Amino acid sequence: MSSSADRDPNEFADERDKIAEERDALAQMLDEVAATRDVKAIGRDVRASGRDRTTSTTTGGVDAGFADRFLSAGDRDSAAGDRADSFDDRRRAASEREKATAARQQAADARGAARAAAERSEATAAALRADVVSGATLGQAQGRLMQRYDVTADGALEMLNELADRQRVELAEIAERVARLGVDD
Image (cartoon, rainbow, N blue to C red):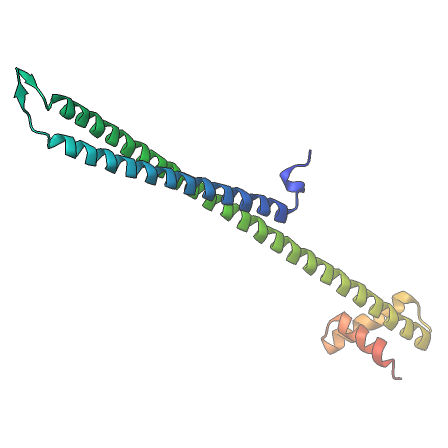
C-alpha cells in the first residue's frame, strides 16, 4: 500500500474534489428534507388553528370541542418537532458544506504543491542543463588553449582563471568567448 506522499498530488486533489461534490449533494438533500419538514409544520399549524376555532359547546355535560382542542395540541407538538428536525437537518447541511469547503481547500493545496514541485524540478533541470553546457564550453575553451599554447588541461584552466580575474568577469563567460571566438596571439 502506498503512502499519501507517494501518490500523485493531482489524483489526491481529484479525490478531494469528488468528496466535496458528494458533501454538497448531501447538504442539498438535507436542505430539501428540511424544507419538506417546514411545509409539514406549517400544514399542522394551519390544521391546529382550524381546530382551535371550534367552539366549546356543552351537550349533556360533555365538552364537544375537547377532542378538537386535544388534536390541535398534538398537531402543534408535531409541528414543533418538525421544526426542530428541520433545524437539525439545516445544521447538518451547513456542516457538510463546511466539510466540502475544507475538501476543496485540500484539493487546491495539493494542486499548488504539485505546481511548486514541478517548478522546482524544472528549475533544477535547467540548472543542470546550464552546468552541462558550461562544463562543455569550459572543456572546449581548455582544448583550444591546450592546442594553441601546448599546455596541459590544468595549465589551460589556470590561463582561463587569470584572464577572468584580469577582466573581472565570470570564468564561464571567458570560457564561452574563447570557445566561440578562438584565441588571438
